[in-house]
Image (cartoon, rainbow, N blue to C red; front, side):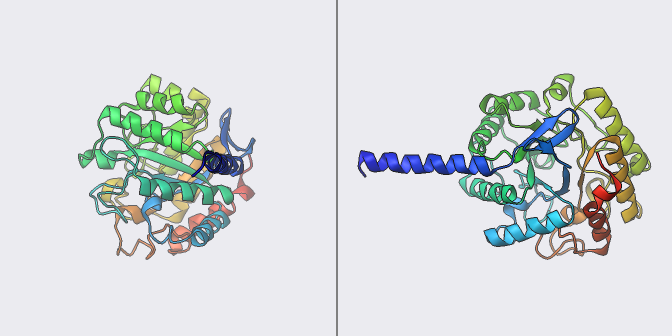
Length: 334
């Protein structure tokens, strides 16, 4: 290849990158609210932890866009996706290699390519990805990166995903280790990237003072059924955090339904439990990510859609909640 041809290839690659960046809507923060390209954004999500590693969701661009359109029809414009899906708990689609990070913190090319394709699809549909980097579940299974490798992985991911502004990084799911240096590593590469973290299990609302101060928005896992009525307790916790820190606050993995495994409810739950909690959280000025019970039971369970995707229409229980999310603007306006 001649020097002239090399220059042409380089120019085309740069143009493609700039084009992708220009087409990606930018998630932002204004006071205690979210914005998308500077306009108010009603951050409303669903847990889809296995999205990078689910074969059906990623079978084709066309199919992925169809699923994203379906989520949007049901009021969902955020997917909470995990980079680490390598725990040993038998969740849907987990595997040893299901992680963006190799042991030294370098990025695995296969999952990274899928994530980029997903972000491009999501950008085209006006969907935001809350990307959880590291998880308590993997940590407790002794799947742990050294501190330096965690910083390297987070920084490399921040560099690779610069064109996609429709992603926010969540450092941890329900844990906090080395969080402050990881956030600083991300911000050193991409100061504009929105960063948050879930610092502990349900009811652990914040991490250290330094950690909390660094967050662009807060994503606690509010108290669940073992603490009382979550539709009363969680909105009070969200209200406190908004008043105390003056940042957007997301009820990130609220009280669950279904199995008692892994922190789930001990007694029966009803769709109205979640609908009332969502409504009250919104009334406090907070935001929500609805949690699907499919992730605690494993493929083949009656709770899990055959595709391994949190389909809003799979169960009558979930559909009630999703139909409420679809009509959310009718009952609440910021």
